Amino acid sequence: METINSFLHFEILNYKEYTLTVVNLLGLLAIFLITKLILVIIKKALTRKHKINQLDDGSIFALYQLIKYIIWIISIGLMLETVGIKLNLLLTGSAALLVGVGFGLQQIFNDVISGIILLFERSVKVGDILDIDGDVVIIKEIGLRTSKGLNRNTIIITLPNSLITNSKVINWSGQSKKTIFIINVGVAYGSDVDLVIKILEDSALEHPEVLKKELIEGRFINFGNSSLDFQVLFYSENVFRIERVKSDIRRIINRKFIEKNITVPFPQLDLHLKSNDTDFNTQNK
Image 1: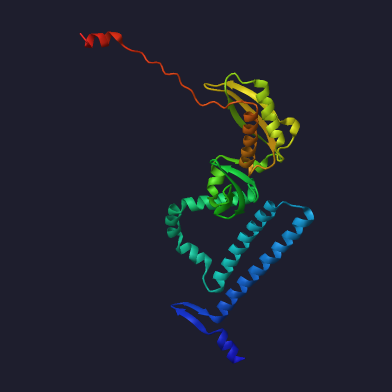
Image 2: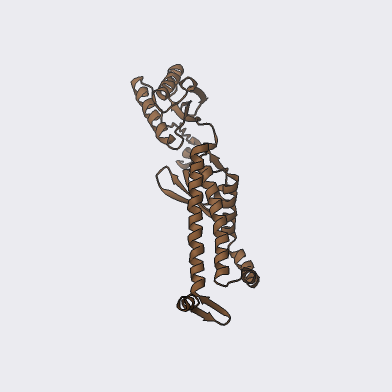
């Protein structure tokens, strides 16, 4: 018994008034393992609740992230107390340092606060499709400082949370499941307007990922500089891959234009040359 007691109180580190013993390390390890166990239990409970109440994945992920951060903050505080580091003394002694560091880490703090806002507010959730500065991404993970998204080129992008909260962001997932999209087309002057509109509507109608067939609409929108300008409007659920859908519809439109001898014009400019006969005659006298 004395041997075990001696081992537990064996001093690993002794510096001035601070002493680190085997007991402290075991307590540190115990807190770490208990924290991991609690998080595993909470995650399983949330997963079970997700299946029962049919909560969306984004809500479950946000709730788990919040609980995880809170538990780890408490756990780290207990770990420091276990190894003999008093939190009140640590905070008091480092107050001036923290002020200086705070000025240098303003952007990081901004990202962290933005992450907390995202997790609490849940205006953006995992699985949402966002348009941020013209780049469309699916949110795969929301962290405390950064979030991760997958863009249309299947590249993982790390996004500072402040970019999501402070920028103009279009959340395609925040709308109804069907979203309206537009394809612009120009044809040569003299083309049959009614035929062009029918081709545009029929082309969208052919695509299997276009919804609400009765809501497909072709429009004659303007007399352009070099062309008659049209639009075709259609609905689709495939928001993330909509550029592929648009490309397919454009191919169908082009094929039908060729079949019906409808041409897409090149930009045309009229160049007027004006000669100055007076200057020419003067130079030749």
